[in-house]
Image (cartoon, rainbow, N blue to C red; front, side, top):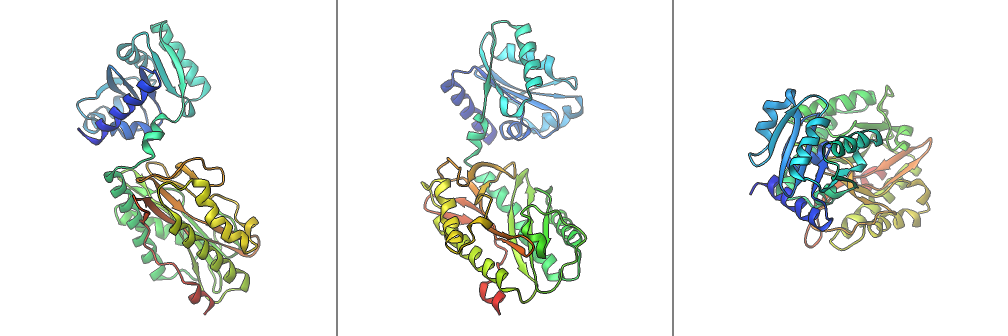
Length: 367
């Protein structure tokens, strides 16, 4: 059984528990996860009586190559509503059919429901949330290998750009250099817009690289990720360019301590909220709690931000096979910022770190 077939089997078992006869999958990462299909227009219908992938003529050839023989590929017009109704009626006549409500607009959902009930008035369309995402929480060995490969590309790209020097270069130039390196290393792209934030710009967690020239004696927050086999990676390093003001030296030391404590605490059974607290308590004890506003981390996979949410509000408990970021930060408006982020996979007895770029030591910053 292929990994895609195994995933679909698990979904069908989950549908039985939810008393659903089929699920309409519209979210592209979920479609890819279950079928292997890569394209901008595709709908999966997975049910007890069969499985279909719907797309249009632009993807007819590629879809048949990407999707296994056990999933029927149906080619329709650009608007797949009509062929979707036919597929659902064939696979779940008169049944209860789930629709991914979190990824379907109210208008589109109403159109789909109307089309289905017009074809078979006995069909019930049920809003369904997070069913495929629940399967995606635990990565299999192939998924972890792809994420690790993407993480390795990030390590190599950052090492190359830093070796060439960043002082005297605009933030945007450094970001472009990192993106170029990723493509040269075989990445399918950057998993998000690369962040290069120097000096005071580092106090903006999601700063956009601009024309500011990187100077001596400041911190530069560099946050980047790659895509390999459709899977994302994510890493941040904060790089000093020379002697620092006391406030930044102290901020870096506190973040480094908080991140090390959180990495050591990653293990199966710890809740996401408790793990967030491990790092947050270190920063709060240093009197800088209000400067750490975001969560400690997030899941990474086919999407750069996915479950579980590692934050004060996080409700998940870590399990082996989950892949999460550990990224505490301190942001001092008008002064600068620090974030240190590693990507880790939860193992049976702890965690394996997938990010291997060196982290400047506190002693090297203080001189």
